[in-house]
Length: 449
Ligand code: NOJ
Image 1 (cartoon, rainbow, N blue to C red):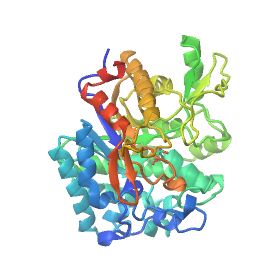
Image 2: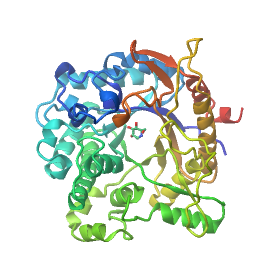
Image 3: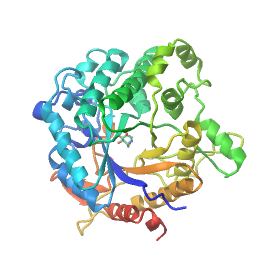
């Protein structure tokens, strides 16, 4: 079965990674503005003050989406651009920027998928404890209300949080992302729980303040396993491994987040400290966290093979890897969405998938990124298989539309379908953007040509 007719072909980005204009038009500071100023925090001392200057060049980016025949654009709103102090007075100029972007997308027949939180917490809220302070949940709900009221009738697809797993583990456990903290596990758990509460309150606010129906989900990430043999037994071990939490690295799994928001509890099979924490959560919190959702968003880049006995299988040394050294394992786009659909029963949207390559401009002025084309072809064919097998997948968003600021790696990693020549900010569509455009236009038929 080919992709369904209404399959969503999109590309994704996030505010801090592309917008720049870090202090323009009344924007408040975010924890990423602060973190980038810490010596040694970011490769080569880089930051997102200018990034791709999308704040001023978004119309070029919309044109690129249109040229690629894409039907949707996932982008995030910078919370401190809208509420410079995190709560309270609203910055109309910040809203005006997103109005222009949303209007232009709609004029071009491109559906906006708006992410509310892609890691750039207002610094003013960090000063009050950030995600460790439960008050941030109410602040997030206030922000969600402002957005829902303002974009009512225009934006109908929302993602509350992007990858709470990474926001927590990198920001609050390992300290390699903003706000750069290394908190004890009890505090990490509190931050986790507050994010879940914030999600629930935001879902309620989005639905309450929208006069027309909106579709709401979350973008989750984590390790997913795939079977080395496609047998029922091996599929079972891969499924179980994907949803079991080990004391080490437990943060990087889908289930603590998705079990919470979809099933209304933290996973039963969890390390002692999480079980203990979970036992203390009052029912009233679960009534907030567990709200009806329309889809599960999944950011999936690579997976881990596992055999029928539940043993992880070592990947061959010759297996191709991305510039970030992530293994290229297309099979995960077949099995990952399937496990998520089986467990949560909601349509899945691939909210991110992509590859960082050592892209350079060739002497003909073009960027010939054959590795990204190959990646796309192989991953999308696997996604097509899972659709064929009955997994409800509503869409695929490639990460990313353009090269951008890749967090602690600065500008050393290029994930875009479109190359950014940073000194001039010139946008150069890579070969992959042409290929992906054809895939979108043909609703997947181009994968087989
Ligand atoms: C996950 C994050 O959501 C995004 O911000 C990041 O750039 C990509 N993955 C690639 O690492």
